[in-house]
Length: 216
Ligand SMILES: C[S@@+](CC[C@H](N)C(=O)[O-])C[C@H]1O[C@@H](n2cnc3c(N)ncnc32)[C@H](O)[C@@H]1O
Image (cartoon, rainbow, N blue to C red; front, side, top):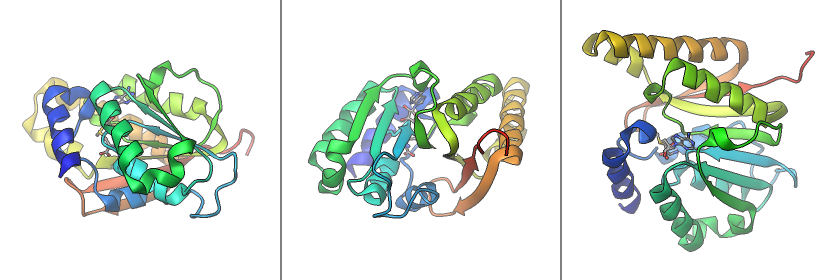
């Protein structure tokens, strides 16, 4: 129960950046790590970046999959989540094999200099809470942080923009339509897999994108 309570406190305190009412389910966690190498097959220097880990449901799935191989960097903007996650990583036995392989950073991911450093990015960012330009900025930034052929995995709540549209004001509707357009354009160009996860609050869709090496 500790994770949902800690999460909901931040929903009330910082809704714009938290963007949800509950942490993601273990089912969503499993779906979001699906494109990564299988357990036991991570190359030694394989680097994964997780953006917006919150209380750590995706971090737990990553720790299980990576199981002491590769390097995992976590970037979280909210200091309360960072403190929670630090305690969890230190005390939860499930993180033991990965402890020496995890670096936890506090800050806005946009502060990380654009350099192709990572083989894979897993993002928990709440795109629907940002403007279309911000979402485009995040996606372009992720692309710039990935090595050629790197993958980006993120999630969004199923049909939430379509469901909200009739009930929100014009300004919010225009913003949500703009976010849809950006997400759809990136998906058309780069999506390699999409997975619906019904057991999550609310149900979610994972999008896996691959940025092919230039010239392919
Ligand atoms: C929807 S929550 C997801 C948390 C967790 N991954 C999960 O699935 O339960 C969004 C997370 O992104 C973080 N976040 C929002 N904007 C961020 C930014 N610019 N840089 C880093 N983290 C950010 C929030 O603080 C929060 O932890």
